[in-house]
Picture (cartoon, rainbow over the protein chains, first blue to last red):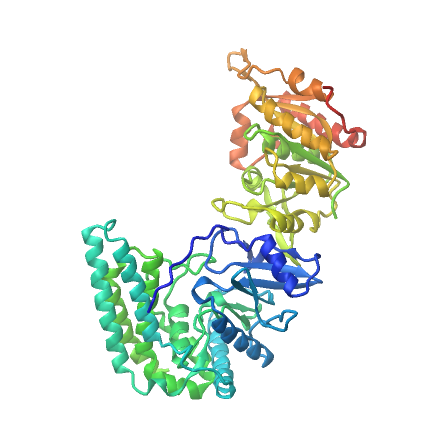
Length: 362
Length: 257
C-alpha cells in the first residue's frame, strides 16, 4: 500500500482566518461569527490550535450556538471517504446515538471543499473528559454496543461499495509496520547499528506475529459493520455522572467486524497510557488492567450481548494485532524509545495469552 | 462588565519591568482600598501568574465560554498563563486574538472592580491594535533610563497618540542602584525627563531603583508592595491613589516636535 507522507504544516495547527471566513460563507454565516480559542476540558481548560496537531479545528460561536469546524486530516482527505464518514455520523446522530450533529452547507452537502481541502462543521458539545472511573468505562462499553447495533442496521440498509472502505485490524497493523519500515530505511544513516538491529528485528517479528494471529481467527468476516475505528477515551465526553454524552472523531472509520472497536476500546481503556490532553502515549504498560477489561466488556454486553458473543472468540487475537499496530504507531511518532522494540512482542504475547482466560470468564 | 477606569501599563521595550509595575500598581491600589482587576495582555509571555501565584484564593473558572477571573490576594486576575502550560508558545492573530480577548477580557465578569490594570506586551503588535481600538483607557509608560528603551518607547507612544490613548506619565524603573555602603550608582545613564517626558509633555511620576528584593518577591509569587515598607513602596502607593483619583483629568497630549 502506498504511504502518504505527512505534509509540512505552515500554520502551526490553525485553520487561518481567511479560510474559516471562506468556509463559513458556504454555510451561510454572516460576519457576526467569532472564535472561542479556549475550551473547558475536565476541570481545566485547553487552548485549541496552540500547537500543531494532526487534526486542525476551531470552535466557532454564531447566533448563540457553538460549532466545531474540523479540517479532514491529510491521511483520509478524499471526497468519497469524507462522505462515507459523515453520512454515518449524521445517520447515527439522527438515530439518537451519541454523536454530534453535522451541519449542512447551503448546498445541502455534509462537508465543504475549500482551497483543495475538506472541512465539516458539527455541533460543539461540552462534557467531562475521561477520569478512569468504573462508571465511565462501563458506559463507554455500553455506548459502543449501542453504536454497533445501530451500525449493523445502517450498513444493511445502505448502498455503498463495500470493498472501498473494507479494512481489518490485521491489514491496518501491517500498514503501520510498513510505515515504520519505511521510516527506518529513510533514517538508516542516522540510526546506530544497535537501534537499527532492534527496530528491523521488531518489524520482522511483529509482521510474523500479525500473520500468526490472523491465521488463528476463523469466521472473522461474517459480520461487517461500519466501526468507529478509534474508540479511545479521548474521543468520548461524559456527563457529570459518567454517562456518555458524545463520541466523536470518526476519521478512522472503516467497514470491519465489530471486534475491531471492542479490541481497540479494551487496549485504549485498560492498557494504553496517554500524556495529558494528548493522544500521544506515555511509557509502554506491561499488563492489561483486568478489572477495566471486565468493566468495559460488561458495559458492552449489557447493551449488545449478541454481537459480543459473536466477537468473543476473536477478541484476544485482535487485541494482539491492535496492540502491535498501536505500539508501532508509538515507535513511528517517537512516543516510545526504540528500546521498546526489544521487548514489545513479549509484552503482546503474554497479554494475549492472559486475556484469553479473562475474556472466556466474563 | 468592564470597570470604568482602565489603566494600561506599557513600554516599547521588553524587560524594563512592565509586569512588575502592573502587578505592584494593582496591589497598591488594592491596599488603598480600591476594588481592582488585573489583566495580563502579554499572551505570548505571561509573567503575572508567576508574580502573584502564591496569593491564589480562587483559580479562573469557566462560565458559558467566558473565563471568569481568579482571585489572588483580594484582586481579580485573568491571564492566559493560568490556562496554558508555560512551554506552550502563543501565536495569536486575527479572529483567534479577538476571540481569546473576548473570552479573557471583554465578555467576562470583572465583578465589582472599579479599576482594571492591563499589563501590555512590549513593542507594537496586533494585541495593542486590538485592545486600543476596542477599549479606551489611560496609559502609564515604563522605561529604563537607556537610549535603547527610549527609541522603542517613543515609537509606541506615537502609536498611543494615534489611538487617542491618554498618557498619565512615565515611571523610570531600574533608575539607580543603592549599594549597601550607601553609595548611589546610576547603572544606566539616560535622561528620561529630557528624552521621554518633555517631548510628550509628560510628568516623570516615579523613579524605582534597581533592587534585588523586588525580583525576589516576584519570583516567590508575592508582589513586593504587600510586605515592603520602603520609601519606594510608599511612593508607589501614593501614585496608585493619585492615578485613580485624577483618572479623568489625564488627556491626550501631542508631541512637541
